[in-house]
Length: 198
Ligand SMILES: C[S@@+](CC[C@H](N)C(=O)[O-])C[C@H]1O[C@@H](n2cnc3c(N)ncnc32)[C@H](O)[C@@H]1O
Image (cartoon, rainbow, N blue to C red; front, side, top):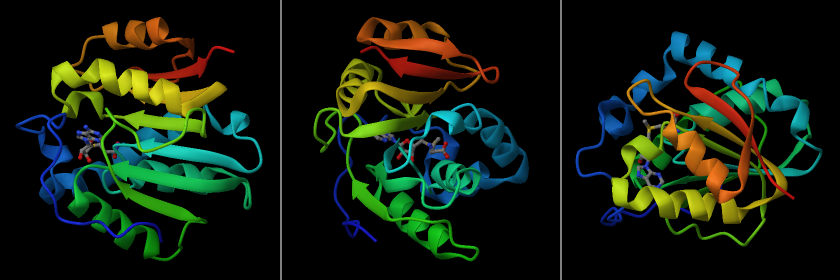
């Protein structure tokens, strides 16, 4: 199931004091029933846009609950490849365990230790990107690079599901707009569906 997470120093773009659910010990908070319900309601907005064979990238995947929920919403055989990327190896170790638990969501799954501000992916290689609760866990100075890198990795016409934690300013959506990813809808408060311009 993809690259084996190695223990290494997190990149500088990871915020010094990550908010609680962004830390491996507290990541279970992300998998509670209420949050999963909210995430499902957000993810439903992208389901009609996931074409057969799509590559779906979950940037800052943490323990992988968002991708897992989306996998369960999509028809079998719809996704060509899932890529879960996170700088914290322990998060990906949790994702590996979660995804192996029955009923196992359909893969294939690639788990990559990496940084949103320097994505190890080719230009336009992702059809859909999930970025939920991630920019808030990054050092502010690295957020523009993360937005630029995510935009680069997304194919023209590709879709972005973006989640903003309640304490974050809505200005983040304007930053995506400026990078060339336009707002399409607001499925829930604190969430946005965007599409990269052609
Ligand atoms: C609050 S958790 C959200 C996890 C997941 N997206 C979810 O909604 O369940 C934030 C995640 O962002 C990751 N993160 C922090 N800095 C990052 C960076 N520079 N690049 C990619 N991910 C990062 C953290 O490791 C953590 O797993």
